[in-house]
Amino acid sequence: MKKFALTFAALLSVGFVSNASADLTDTQKFSANVAVTMSVTAPADAVLTHDETHTNQAFTAQPWNVIGNSQTGVSVSFATDGPFVNTTDPTFKRDAKLGLSINSQTGPGSFTISQATAQTDYANSVNIATVSAVSDGVSNATLDLSVEFIAGTFGTFAAGTYETVVTGTITAL
Image 1 (tube, rainbow, N blue to C red):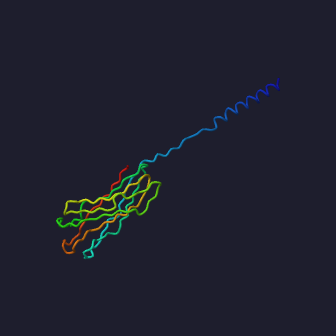
Image 2 (tube, helix red, strand yellow):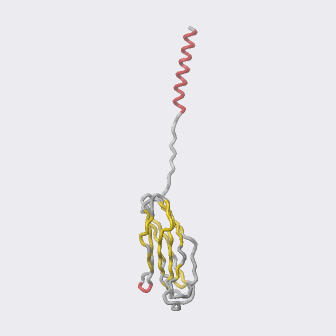
């Protein structure tokens, strides 16, 4: 009888151990939620000194950083707030010309230029110039914005500081 009780106790112990091992594993899911992020970042303000010739005055190309992780892509545009205007006497104006090119880009999507150049024509009431680019998916880019002060004949416009402001706008497609 002792032998039977010992064997029965050993079988019960083995049975409990195998039931306990089923509780030693489980799973947990980890999820990272990534929001749609879009941004356009301007460089520092740009200044030039007119060289007193009749040629257009070109600013150094300005690198704007663009981020768009929308899977359907983004559209980015750059628009003047008007022609260059003399800050002391706003009756003196000069037209502004914009140009846009792709400096660099990364990501599975890619940017293309949809409007490469534009120019104001204040004499004919065209006061805004807009250039633009679009991406076809997730992509980051550095877009070079070129700006020119259309000089015309030097000496036919007043001395002083002439300004225009360019605004970059990004939207998801």
